[in-house]
Image (tube, rainbow, N blue to C red; front, top):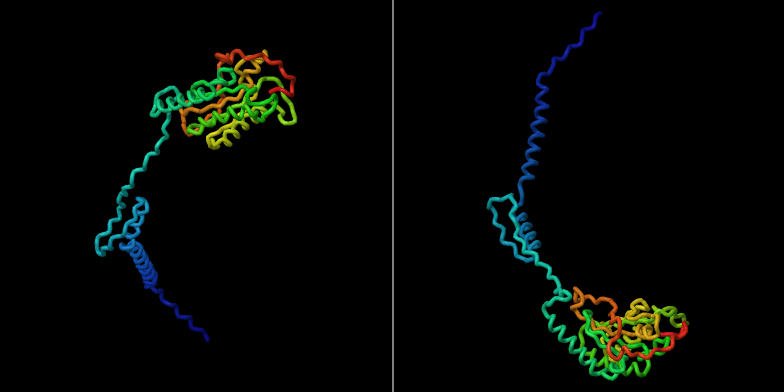
Length: 293
């Protein structure tokens, strides 16, 4: 007995409605999301905007009450920032040029030089001390024989008395004070001082410490040792070597460098030949190496 053929199902021509319904649902969800993103809380946005303006301008302000219902302007508005103050440059006095206060500075230094000349008139007549006005400032050159024993950096009693007179004038000076030590070119090698650098530096420090003990402010003082490298006379003669062994006390003028807040570490060069009584220094017998000053 033959079996009946299975009944063939008819093709469903309405299946596209399922896909269409899914598409419409997704499209609806998309527009809902887009609408929720485009809707801003105007009140919170205005509070944030005013806070940012106060932060950038540096002027704290109290936000105004939020006005609900006003149209929202999405275009950012320009913020008027306060002008940036210009940095004030320090007053610069060029060397050799008259600037504000230049005449007063020169007058003050000349007065200091006259005071020192009056106090040290006896030593100046002997040729032991020389006071000069230079572009660097007031320079007081003191021969080493007045201050130290040969090859030593300890001040003699005569030196302490002389430096005490100089310190009396330095008390009223507000400019930097630079103490420079110099030697001749004879080599030295002792247990205390291995070279002329060490000896000249130690002598400058001894003078600085003496000034501090007499009440001069330490922040004004600078000690520098130049060894034998800045001679003022020839080292071929005993008189020249004696002239090169010296200590210079320099009252530094603010007119000598561009920035008055910086202290130059420069040697105060003396004239090639000492003037006046200093030119008549008595020649001394050259000391043997290791014991000279």
